[in-house]
Image (tube, rainbow, N blue to C red):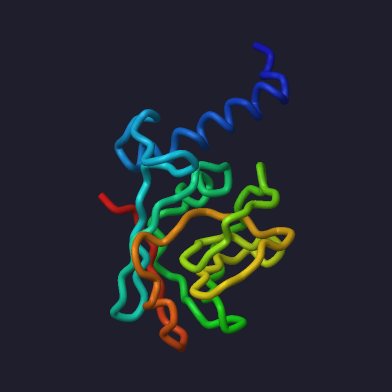
Length: 156
């Protein structure tokens, strides 16, 4: 039996990545909570603080969802407008490019460094920055200065 053509393998991989967060969240594609967002919610915990976020519907966010739960990370201050955390591996950059509507509460992936960026103050899109999701509700806990252990897990 011949192996699938490279483009068929890529299509299969894309289908599997697309299905992963839906399987984790126990939802169906029609259950999305708005254009551009998955039905997948996550919990972000550091120190004694908990935040909830909703992931975007893009290849990088779906790849990120396959890493969950993440329990051995740390989160630290960077540039007076964000906290950052390094992932155990790089995420796909498929579908990356400029996005608008940047605002505090965005959860992004910065591909050149392979880190998450949790924005708590204004910022502008830059090359390599991919929005993964947005914090639901307030993001004030991100303003707490210091370095903390970080956990990120799906919300059930």
